[in-house]
Image 1: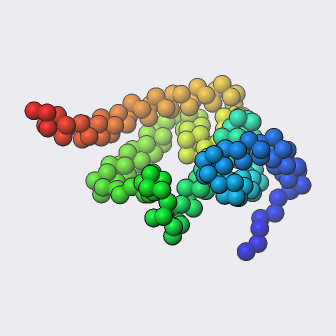
Image 2: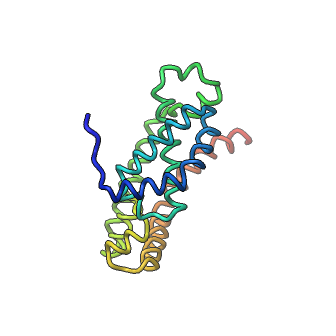
Image 3: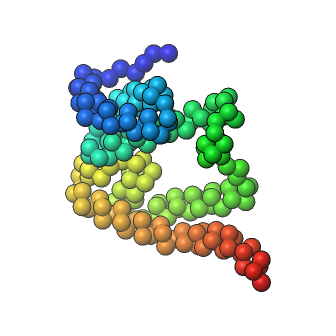
Amino acid sequence: MTQPSITEETADQVAALWDREAEGLLRYTIVRTGSTEEGGDLVSRAFEAAAVDWATVGPRSQDAQRAWLRRTCMNMWIDGIRRSANLDRLRPELARRYQRAELNPADLVVLRQAADHCLHVINGLPTQQRAVAVLYFLEEQPSLVIAERLEITASGVRKHVSEARKKLQAELRAFVDDQHETRTAPREEASA
C-alpha cells in the first residue's frame, strides 16, 4: 500500500504541531492506556492522520487541534480494543466500557427516523443557513473555514449555527421526549 504524499509546507506545519503537542499528547495517552508503548504508537498514528487530513486539522485553533489529536488517539485506542482478540483478558470494567452495546431494533428505527428528520429540517433551512449547517454539523468544518469558504464573517457563521441548532432542537424534541417517556415508564409502573 502506498502512503499518501504531503506537501513540504504541510510537513513543516505538522512538525510545528508535533513540537507543540507531542509531549502533552504522549502523557495523555499513557495515562489513558496505561502503556508507554501503546501511548507512543497512538501519538505517532494520530500525527500521521493529522498530516493526511491537514486540510481539516490545519485551519483549526490550537485548542481545537489539541482536541482533535486527543479524540483521534482515543478513537484509535478504542477501535484497537474492539478488534483485539484479547478483549476478554482485559480488566472487566474496560471490557464492559468499550464493547459495542447491543442495539434494540426499535431504537434503530427511531434513530433512523430522527436522522432522516434532521436532514429534512436542514434541507428546509434558508439557503445560506443550510450551507453553514451542512458544513458545520455534517462535515464538521470549523467556523473560520466555513466563513472563508462561504465568504461571510465568523460571527455570521456562529449566528447561522445557533439558529440551525435551535430549529433542530425544536424539531427533534418529540424524538427526545418519546425516548425519555419510554425509559421512565417502567419505573413509574413499578412504583405504582
